[in-house]
Image (tube, rainbow, N blue to C red; front, side):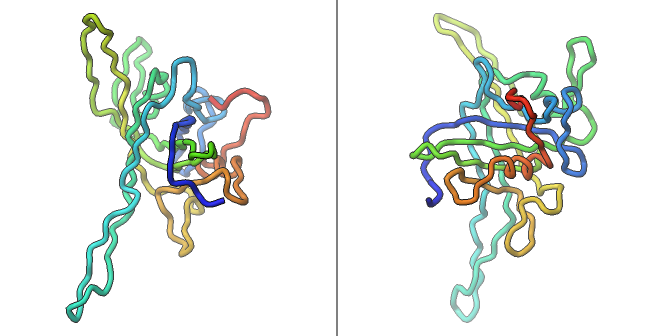
Length: 216
């Protein structure tokens, strides 16, 4: 079945923090959970928007002999804009690189940003899953917008930006020419699709828990 290009819903978003070699940190304290993966789909929790830009750069025409002979293309620079409903604050703090003082306070660390991997799963028009995958990148939160309630409740949902980087593992997201790319998609209806293999690649060797407990 060909890949669908029309989408109608976000199924879920998953996150993981990787170490400097691109391996998942499967630790509830240092990572995002005991398995390393955080499945953002709890009570009242989930993604309301997941907008991806920079998948390709528009080409610049190259001229010779009065004709357009070729196009020059810049590197892929994918960016993911996420709006999260009731995201676990401690999990997001880890991904942004905020550290706790142990007394309820959090401050942005001056150390390097954590290596974050993300999978955004959405449905095509036939309810097959389409996965936008990023094996390495940085998560930021630029602003908070607060408002006061009137006769209507004024809500603000967290808005985050994720900027993709090239994968850390040498064999991750490699194209047909042996070049690494910062983005890869998977399609559940495609012949040969393997969900476990997808997670293992995106999340740096992730191994699913043996129990039926969700990843997060």
